[in-house]
Structure formats: structure tokens, C-alpha cells
Amino acid sequence: MSSTNPTTRTRILDATCELLESTPGTGARMSDIAKRAGVSRQALYLHFPNRTELFIAATRHQDIAHGLHAALDAGICSGRGTDRLAALVATWGAYIPHIFGMAKTLMVLKETDEEAARAWNERMGDFREACSTVVTVLARDGQLTAAMTQEESTDWLWTQLSITNWELLTQSCGWDQARYVMMMQQAAHRVLTA
Amino acid sequence: MSSTNPTTRTRILDATCELLESTPGTGARMSDIAKRAGVSRQALYLHFPNRTELFIAATRHQDIAHGLHAALDAGICSGRGTDRLAALVATWGAYIPHIFGMAKTLMVLKETDEEAARAWNERMGDFREACSTVVTVLARDGQLTAAMTQEESTDWLWTQLSITNWELLTQSCGWDQARYVMMMQQAAHRVLTA
DNA sequence: TCCCTAATTGACAGCGTGTCAATAGACACG
DNA sequence: CGTGTCTATTGACACGCTGTCAATTAGGGA
Image (cartoon, rainbow over all chains, first blue to last red; front, side):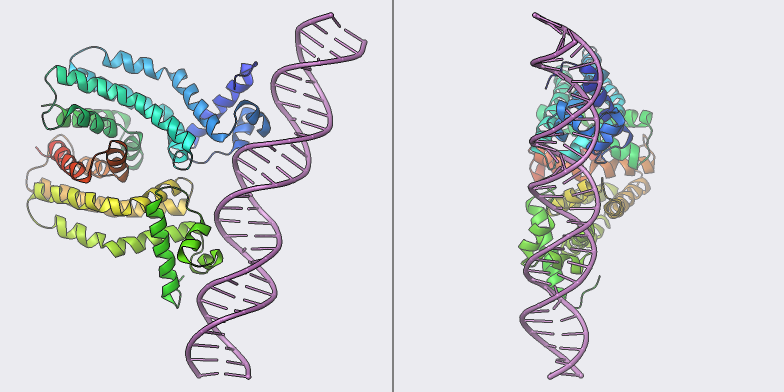
């Protein structure tokens, strides 16, 4: 798994990210990635056991490069409940465009690949944590609606902010990024707060 | 395309629907479908040009069998705006479980198959019509929020009722059907009405 | 009986993944 | 200088699934 020379491995991961971002969801082939990384197809198998693991590693690579966790934590760790809610929507909403291609690919892959499904669920579980945190603060500040339990509120918020919803609104409906964030903040506010 | 003996064709379509419903999203193989239909793999190609077209035909077959359009029209054609909104959510929400397997398969397929994408978009466009109708009536009855345009409201409602959202809430979060419908009605009401 | 159609059987090409063996180049070590 | 090791390349191959083709069989109607 861990190679002594990191440059080739990194180059492969970068190439994978670039390729998947430029062609979201399309089944990028191993040979395509190899070509883009300037490496033989078989070299990929020297660093990653198979296609799925390569994609999973690329996902982590990307998360680290973009500093997702830090950004999320910073945004939702101060202010009253409603402010944190708005910050969560804004931060996550700004992050999605950068990882959409990879995410789409994993989403497609997870339907037929157990390993990919595990990785995807873990990733989504992390984000659900952030949603849960915000909902808890809303409740503590007495701002949460009485119509839903805390868990239901978390479920709804997590679903609302799904990558698929971002895709539908921005890609299919043509909303721009600013409108997406604003509308989502508004909707979350209306549904979750008293 | 049109066969003189409909029984074999129908048996294939039924087998396809059954198989896709029992294993949602999984890439059901042509040989699996043939086995289930009690027919040779090559017989499938006598009735459908390829895998994608078979799935598309099966989708239509299913929509007709379940009478989707009639149900939708009946539900949203009477009452004031808010009543029609509730009816739309209830009718569509009750329909999704019956077609989830097929829908999931098409959703996966559309990422790599142009033809499947076309069919899927057409299908989703039909449902968007229903959403648009309800939003128009809401506006006419003066019940629509001022925070969104009619088109934005339609976009949001259509996204909200996406099959993926149903999947996240009922499959991943474990909501039962009744709760899903109730919460969705509530959320739609809060976000869309003044 | 002859013909037409639907269906079966078996074979095969194409494509992508994953594996394997043989080989080449770089580099450290004695 | 020669040797061993690590990384990468090349070329070949098995496997699984889709889609195509040719030869053959079974049934029904004129």
C-alpha cells in the first residue's frame, strides 16, 4: 500500500482526481488514468490493488488537499444555532463543486461494489456528524421546531444537503452557486426552526 | 420492435421488472433476465436491440401497469393549492416504492449511456410538469411564498421529491412510508407557502 | 407438403479488469 | 566494479459481460 517513492503514487492520485472532475460519473478507465498520469496501466496496480481502491484513495487524497474537516469544524463552532446552520450550508455548499466528479463516480460505483459502498457511507457518516452537531446546538438554543425530533431533523438536513440535490438544482435546474446556498439556507431555516 | 406474438415480449418485460425490483440498482445481467423469463439469452435480442432499450421498455411497461399518470392527474386536479400540494406528495410518495428498483437501475445507467439519460430525463420532465401545475395553483390561490419565483418553487419541489431523497430517508435513515409522506408534506408546506 | 416465424444452440469479436512473467533502468552497498 | 533490490515497462493472457452471426429446430397456416 505505502510506496517508498511517493511521487508516482501522488501523480496517479492527482491524475485520477483531475480526470474524474473533468468527466463526472463517467466510468473513467484505468488506461485513461494511466495515460493522464504519464505511466503504464500496470503501474497503477503496483500502487493500488484495484480500480475501486484507487478511487477511494483519490477521494481521501482530495479531502485532505481541500481541508474539508477543518473548514466544516471552523464554520459550525461559533455563534447561535441559526448562524451555525447557515454556516454549515454555506461551507458544504461551497465544497461540493470541488469534489462533485469524484463523488459522482463513487456514487455510481457503490451500487455494484461493496467496498465502494463502505467508503461512501463512511464519508457520508462524517458529514452527518456535522449536521447532527448543528441540530443539537439549535435544540440547545431553543430554536429547533417541535414538529420533528432531533434525529429526524438531522436526517432531513443531511438529505437536503446531499450531493444529488446539489446536482439537481445546479446542473439540471441551472441554479448558480449563490442561489443554491441562499435557497438552501432559507429552506433549512423554515423547516428546522420554530 | 413490435413482435407478432406479445406473450414472450411481455414475459421478458415482467421478468425484467421483477428482477430489478428485487435487486435495485445492481447491474442485472442479460442472462439473469433470460433465465427468469424462461427464455434464451439471445431471445432478448429478438425483441430489444440492447440492454438499455430493454430497461427503458420495462420502465414504460411498469408505468402503464401502475397507472402513474392517471393517479397523479386525479390527485392534483381538485381543491385549493395546499390540498393539491399534499396530494402530490402523497401520490408520488406512494408510487416510488413500486418503481424504485427500476428507477435506480436507470439512474445508474444514465451516467454512462446517452439513450438511458434521454429516457430518464423525459420521465423526470413528466413529473416536473405535475410539480409545476401544483405550484401554479398555489400562486393563483395566493398561497405561494414571496421568497421564490414560481420556477424556483417548482425546481425546489421537484428536487425535494426526487427518488434519491426518498431512498436516503427511507433506506438510509429508516423512515417508514407514512413518516416520509408526512414530513415531506410538512416541509413542502413550510418552504413553499406564505 | 411447403413456407414463414419464433426460438434455440453454439460460437465468436470486442472491451475492460486484473494477473503474470520477462525485462530494463536507477541506485545503494560491499 | 559487480551485485542485489526496487520501480516501472512491455506484452501476453484469462475472465466476464455485451452484442452479433449462422445453423438448426418446432409450430402453425395456406
